[in-house]
Image (cartoon, rainbow, N blue to C red; front, top):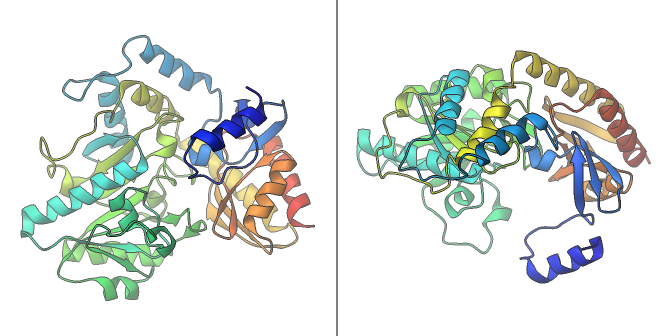
Length: 388
């Protein structure tokens, strides 16, 4: 099929849930992608933070192919080595005690919500089920995670929503105004990705953890987009010295295959019992083999490299005329300009640069192994587009 046929059939047969850009990606290598016409693009999106080692990563491919040659799927009624090895590695890198695997960030967050409510029910009985999330948060598109999302624009059409979610401003005053004796957890993103790459204040995070510990409220950190080396830390909460009770992640964890993880720390390690939760494809051995090949390579050296690349990107993007500010950490950046973000993204695409948007900002989530010459080429295109 040629590009025109693919786009035509997409419009004809697929649900119109995505505002797609007008290209058909055919292949790639590292941080470079190619469309059906052979045009080259610098990839500063990485599949929305998924392809952390870029496209055609040999280590990941070999791990996935090796597992496919053994068995592609078994149910969770049986043990599987890739799942166990991945769980152990995540626990070793975070201090978590137990892991539940699902297929996405939304599923990981569903598990976190259920775990928090069961923890509270088991300890305090019925009626302590409220979860505070933050305004401008994003936690997924299932009904429960959509209910947890603190953005009104996502709450159209789908009522009634799951009850007992309250939305606080990202401040201790905001938390205090939402807190009641029915609160069982606070759920946050350290960096709110979908709403503009907004980094939460460090003092607020420290005080929030203390607030939660004093009241036996679980602190849940959503690391779906920020995790797995994206910010220059294994998980972004580590940059602030936080000790959460539950951490969720997905996206970059799998390197290209669907997987999500809910990591439970000391308080919650015994909360879930047989039958409390489950997932047919959760912890799929092929997805876990791929994820292992990703997590094994995220070491101190790579994290320092990501921090350096992020600082270089941020410093140089800030110098571009018409850029108002650059937010974010590591290779998760949001660029605020005086132009509509979608228009900037479309202009970049025409010049061979793939970027994302987040509200009124250009969002950059390049592969962690993007090369300096590719960063320079991306900055050159951004300068041409934004400084006009």
